[in-house]
Image (cartoon, rainbow, N blue to C red; front, side, top):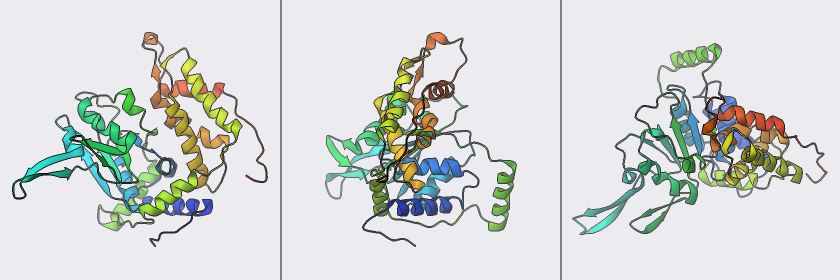
Length: 329
């Protein structure tokens, strides 16, 4: 089933994406929309994902299942208050038998890194991820170590437990391409979860790799070729620009937010077998790509509005472009 191909078409990207998601769905029931959004983030360069939801909603299972289906190396770090930066990056240790310092690489040297309950670690430890997430490298004792390609961080945090946690600084939140909530399963989906577990007689769900990391990088490169009409591009800019002038927003979306929309919309189009972006591709990611990038005005404390509500207002205030694709696209 695993194979590497020399050239990739949009149809192949869509086909592989469907197979990968179907493989993950063997372990994760009823979350097709979330899985497709995560697949789009994976196919976007810099597609780090922040999963924020209640305990027990398969955040870790989803991350691990994707790593298997994508054929990638996976490592997990449980973030705790006593976790040190060196526990993530590694460092040089003295080996007496060789009488010299040797580099011992930390768990960050992997393809997919799960940062579980990231907000439980101190800001100093959280910052150890900053350089890695943006520059895809780690500096140890003045020496730069390049991380594997691809390198994707999937972080989780619990939205209800704040005692003993350190909220992520805006600089790090901005480095996550999307912030996604999983949500509870429906009664029918939960019944299916129990039914499959009873039939399987094991907690483990056997999954297999659909592609190799090399094939994945080709899928990413193909997604970069998806056409974006100038009117659609300006629609993204208008959405981001409105967030900076909204009266209830203290800090608006940075250019990293508009770049995220561009990358995600291209990947979403490719996953759905289109070589051009339509406005609906952008609408799909307005909330997950932009809501975590704004800071509300603290002086308006009496106005009970969330970031999601503000982004929804902004989306409704921006006119959606209407255009016809020419024969070439």
